[in-house]
Structure formats: C-alpha cells, structure tokens
Image 1 (tube, rainbow, N blue to C red):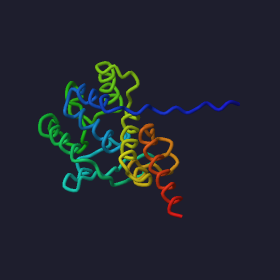
Image 2 (cartoon, rainbow, N blue to C red):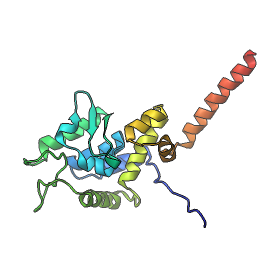
Image 3 (tube, rainbow, N blue to C red):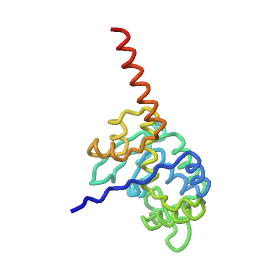
Image 4 (cartoon, helix red, strand yellow):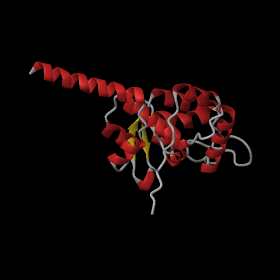
Length: 198
C-alpha cells in the first residue's frame, strides 16, 4: 500500500492577512478571525467561547471546549480584545445566554453561531479575496507559524495551540525559507566562532 502524503494548509502572507481582514463584513467576524490568527484557536474553540472565558485585563482566554475535551488558559493579543469589545458594544444583540459569538440577523438572531455559519462567513471572504483555499485551519496554522518565526519556543507554541504532542506542533509549522536560512546562518556562525576560538 502506498502512503498518501499529508498536505497541510499554506500559511498566509502579511498582505493576504490584510486582505482577509479587509473582506470581513462585521465586527463579530473580525473578532472570530482574530481569535484564530492571534490565538491559534480551532473553529470549535472559537464557537465555544463564552463571555466568562474572556480575561481582557490579563489578556487571556480560557478554552473550555478544546479538542478531546482538554481545557487550557492562553495569552492573546490586546488586538483581539479590542475587536471583541467593538463587537459587543456595536453588534451583539441582548440574549439570555453567555455564548460570545451569535447570529446577528434573520430568524436565528441571537442564537449561538454554528460551524455552518462560520463556514458561510469564510465562503464570502474566499470570494471577495480570491483566496480559494482559505479555511479556519489555515488561519490557525498561520498563527502558530508566525509565533515560532518570532522566536516563541516550540513547547510554548504547543501549549498555546493545545497540541497533545510536540510532534503535532512541529508538523503544523510552515517556517518560511528566510527564517530557516537565518536560523541556519546564525547556528553556523556560532559553530565557526567556536572553531576559531580553539
């Protein structure tokens, strides 16, 4: 039997991230995308967020509905909380539950947003940006790759995104060739310096 290679989503470049953010129609949609781009949340984790899971003062999120029932507490950028604040202040209707992201219009207004609803939002973004393969998974992978490229330790990235295995984190990261080249040149320069010192 031949083993089929597993292909992972391509990571978005900075201009593509800008295009995605510009193509979003609501403050709610922006906050959800920010949760994936800045926090590395899975689709189910974004949809599972409740008001009590937010700690803006500490810039942290409690993920109560992680994959496999695992929970975690993660840091997330103030930019995410700004987006959430704008959504709560301007768009979220008064409801009798604490789900963070809700339907904004139509007969289901005020009900928790579903996976199909989030997929529909991304369908629109794909059409408006010309990014035909844009997915929640790609937004998440973009986050963890950028965190690693910015110097975050692999174990910290693993904890951030809720991987049970460090190998899953390694596989999920799509390091840019320029980042890899810099890491390699820095390492070889250190090796050469050690050689000349002896």
